[in-house]
Each structure stands twice: as C-alpha cells, then as structure tokens.
Length: 441
Image 1 (cartoon, rainbow, N blue to C red):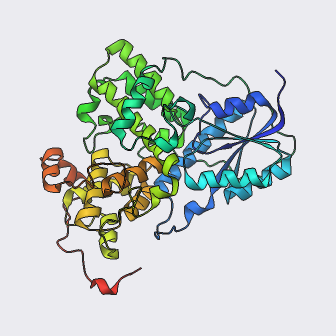
Image 2 (cartoon, one colour):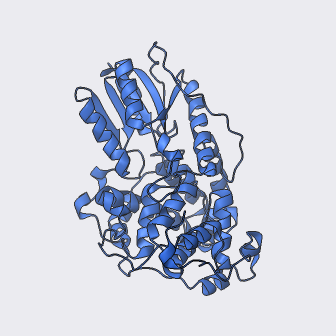
Image 3 (cartoon, helix red, strand yellow):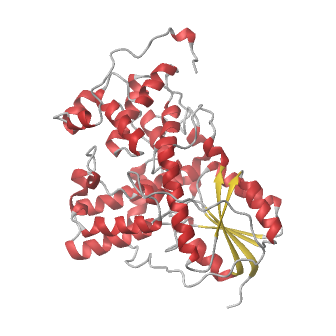
C-alpha cells in the first residue's frame, strides 16, 4: 500500500497510548514520514477566569508520567515524541511550516477550545490534509441512532438508545496493535526534555501502569461486587479507578469493555459487571453532551438557561477548597482530594451539594477547582456533572441537594473516613466579613 502523504504529524492529546490508538494506526498507514508531537499548554500554569490555576501538582505529575511512558513506547518503534511547550496552535503551526507537513492527525476531542484550535489550523493551512479520528469513546458519531442536534435530553433516554449498541460490541474489538511506524524526518526538531518522574502518587500515569491496573482489577473478584461498593468513600478497590487512565487516554474504553467481557466469560455476568458498562455509558453521554451544547456547558445558566440563586463569598469558597467548613464529611473529602487528586463519586456529589446549597456559591467555581485538582479530570464529565447537580443541566428533577448528616450516617457511620482525613476539624463560622466587602483576594 502506497502512503498518501509524504510527512504526517500526529498531535497527541487525550490519547497517550500505543495500543488501540486508532489515530496513530491511521497516521502510520498513510504517511511516509511521521512526526509525533505533544504540546504542553502554557495556559495550564496560569490563572483562569475563576482565579484558579488550571492544573495542580498532582495532576501535572500524572500527565508527565503519561508523557514519559508514551515517549519510551515510541522509542521502541524508532520514533521520538517531540514535546513542545507554549500556545498549542502556535507550536503546531511552527512544526507544520518547518517540516513541510502535508497531513495532520489528531484524536477527536469534545472540548470547546480544542475544537476551536483545530478549526484555526485548518483555516491557516487550507492546502494540507487534516483528520480527526474518533478515538476517545465506545461509539463514533456514525454509530449514533440520532443526530447531535437531537441528543436525548436525559441520560435515561440516551441509555435506551445506547444499550443495544453496547451489547453488540464484540470481545476482541480493542486488540488493534501497532505493527510499525514510519521514520521521523531527518531534519532535527527542537523539543523539551522528556520528563523523569518518580513512580509516586495515588495513581501512576502511563499506558504501562494503566494496563497493569486493568489486569490486576479483573484478576480479582472486585468487578463482581462493584455496584455494592462503588459509593464507598475511601477503599482503593471499591471502585474501578479506570477514570484517570481513560481521561488522559492511557486506556481506551474499548479495552475496558474487552477486559470486562473476558472477566464475565470466567466468572459470569451480574448486575455489578453491567454497572461498569452503565458508568461507561455516563461517560459516553457527557462526551456527546459537550459536543452538542459546547459553550453552554460552561454557562452559569447551563443548557436550561436557568440561573441559580447564588452569590459569591470568597471566604466560603476558600473554606470549601481547604476543607474548613462546618461539615466534617465535606472537609474529609476535600482533604482527600487535595492530597491525592482523587475523590469518590459519592464524595463528589456531597461536596458539590454543599457548595451549591449550604454555601450558596456559583457552581462553576467548584467545577473549576475540580478541573485543577482531579487526576481523572475529563472536561465533559466534570462540567456536565456539575451542571446536573446545580439543576441547570441534564437532570429533569432539578438540582440535587444531599442531607449531609444522613449521608454521613450511611457512608461513614463510625466516623473512620472523617477521622482518617481530619474532617472533624470543622469550624462553626466561615463568614468573617460583611458581604458588601467582597470580592477579596
């Protein structure tokens, strides 16, 4: 097969893996030479519109581990990962112009800024080939039984459309292995040094670590009781912990489905194994939700154009971020997040409910703080879930308010989680200035 393009460039983003990377496989098949690139976005390290830095040290370390792992894997194929730091469209434009690139490949991304950047590049270089490959979800747009303009308004409706398709995904679908890679152009390319990161942290980034965790999880019997344990606040094995690897693309959702099907062949399927698919369907829904609504996912009034009744008290927000509220369960969850970059699904619901209802703050500040802290930050799932809980998103029942005392009795009846994460160091008062004095730095 003759290659279509002389020099291709693959722009890695949320697909930091070799195995089952459909974008990389396509670029390898169609190009005589190939440049593999990752751009460290300089905006990650600056304050955003909410006055919050885009990325925490824990999350940045996880990404660095993933970059280093990808670079090592590419070396085994005679390739080098070119790492640039700056404004993404500027860096990609420089590589295109310098190396005479005639084809650019990237995995499709639901993000608003990411899609704008892609459109900017296609307009800037109208005479070269640009291609985005569906590589982040179980289904691509052609598989959907509806147009994006007619996305089901609730997850339940989406699930009814999706489930028949999910059940037909065959075992072995994800086993798409890379055979070889074209060589790099002979011209030297400036690159940032490949990061060397100690294998520390709550979760380790990288395809190798993700595959090991996937194997270990399904080698245990944890999947068989997942539905009963998934809301637990602290134990590592109570939930799958696949979300961080999925978010950065160390794993594809197809690979998770494959491993799950293999588990079911040995141990049998039950409601818990189905629930793992159920959670993947939530991830899928929010991906298409962001594709459908775009900028409206980040609006205060949400997709429903309904403004919540809130104000902004900087001391309340600071107390929430630091885990210094009057609510021990919330404090414990926030301390866990700040120290590890992880919080359970139930914990996320509780702290979000606290910020929105007890503290009466703008939900977008909570979403932005999660964006900074979470190892498994996924733009669609994060902002979609916050909208859902704030009552301006896909939930037909309006905002969700949790009784924090009742939730504590259910999920931490003996106070062990609160004690472990020092949530009992609660404060009785978090307002120390008149509201007329805000905003404060």
